[in-house]
View 1 (cartoon, rainbow over the protein chains, first blue to last red):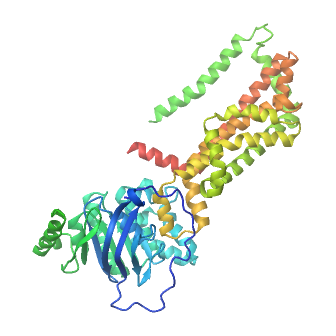
View 2 (tube, each protein chain N blue to C red):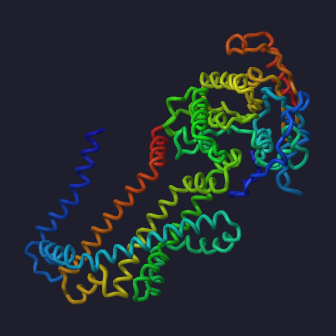
View 3 (cartoon, rainbow over the protein chains, first blue to last red):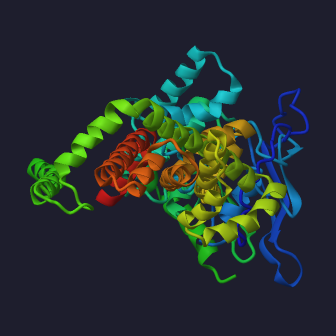
Length: 284
Length: 259
């Protein structure tokens, strides 16, 4: 959570947020997302409040990485830095080697609070279309993108409904569909399944893995649910709190494809969740 | 559910009909010069307003009202946006808003009445000026209360400045803008009548006041009746517009209450 309220409405145009478009494909050794010594301090002098102190981790192309940590650790602040919404105080976050200084064009963000991230005056389909308008796509492609995104989250039937007519889980799926229609290369999700019921949560977790497979996306998920992190991730970044720092990056070596029942009953699953849990439980 | 709706409708329409009937019968044989029989009032109403002065006075008044209100609505929303979004404008207008916020809009009416000249232009200007502030203040409040989450969404998806204004801020602030417009409409109506009563020989207000001053009580009552009818119809029109524009808001509120 940000310590100070954001300024009312910054309306700066963010057209040139990236220095340059990449001309060559990234090599296998360049991480897709590179966070190096990132720090975020709000305020200055006596009243300054350090939320994040020296975070370093990487996310490779096509990876699912989960960030776990106790609540209030500054996970949302971290995501806002990665999404270019807040500037980092020191250190840097980079995509394909380019420092993030504003919302990157290849990134989409699914917010924690679906309730306040969908436009209530737009139907589901129009919510999907809004971020695509400035891309000036041909009508057919626009329709195709929305259709396939809605189909991916199983909401093809709801495209003419308003978000508030849908259940919480369905609204979160709309938010995910909006991100999918945007066709990002990197998808960042902030506790995306925190406020939905258990069954929907399993469905959305599997949807997340399906997206990675179908669209070859790089996905970064913030969660406070350790089981979820181990189930989803190729690697889990465990954060310690106040100020946030990386305790350990745990490689999850569970076989693919993952399945809610078989994967979660593997001895390795129990071992790895215990490893992550003991990192978080351990007094700092 | 249906029965309740029907019952409410019967109560809603029955009460005014009953009151009118009571007025009709109680005043039927009235000889009091100040309270003429309703029948006489209605006859005068028909003679005066439906044919004679419809074009010269009724249409004139309504024209002023709508023109003034339309100017107030457009300028109020535009200035409200500029105030909320452009810092130098905010520094200029914010103190004024804080000052005006404490004053009920109707209390500003005397100022504008004293400014009213004799021409139609001046009357429309006064209506527009008086009605401007409620909309402007509501617009500023509406924009400021748009959630940061929504603006973050707009930034992450790289919406252009124009899209942020017209496709995010404007619709998000619309419920509050409409409550401002509702107050503006009332103020515009009051200033319209007052402007005619004070500085004009034409219009419904002028005719009504003239009737009162010449002891033509039935004519006076007929004028007041007409103003009531116009106010009622204008409000219905406004509610219909609101229901159309804010259907998403009304629906989501109903949904939130049901949950």
